[in-house]
Image (cartoon, rainbow, N blue to C red):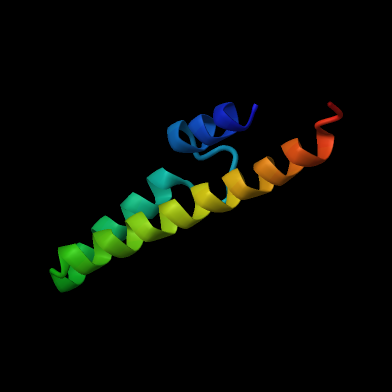
Amino acid sequence: MSNQLIISLKDTSILTIIGVAEIVRQAQQVVASNFRAFEVYTTAALLYFAMTLTIALILRGMERRLNVG
């Protein structure tokens, strides 16, 4: 279940207010205005990683709590 949620996060932005497409679009706009692509795209990647890691940790905790056996 948790893997499917993370895949959905990667594929769509419906599950989150700030999705991957929005992060990339905003990064492109910032790069267009200041020409600092490395810093902007690194920050965007870290944001995306933080979102995915947070969801994975929450779901791992839920799976442990629901594990009866």
